[in-house]
Image (cartoon, rainbow, N blue to C red; front, side):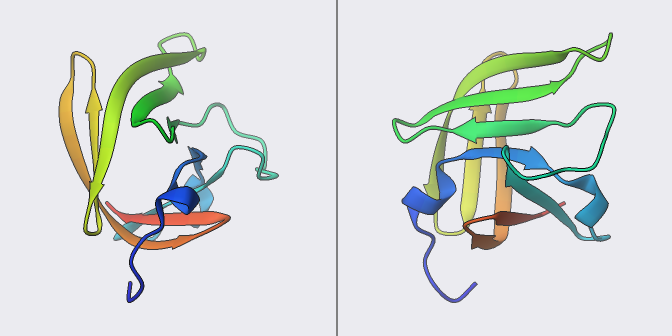
Length: 103
């Protein structure tokens, strides 16, 4: 990505759009995107104050949410979920309606 990321574009509720994944990248869309039906989708909310809310289908297909914090350094998004630790995700591209990250 040539342009530096803008935090204002990154702070959003992002939901995994697995239909658009490639062998090397995962695609996320804003929560209000018109997704096709699915049994459950994982995602995360990046809040402007640095807090993180991760959501994923649980054992009985109900969405479970976990809190944490996030930050951005260069093109790397660091998600620190409580009780799990830090995950680093390299951002490939960011548009207002599409976030693409390395798998």
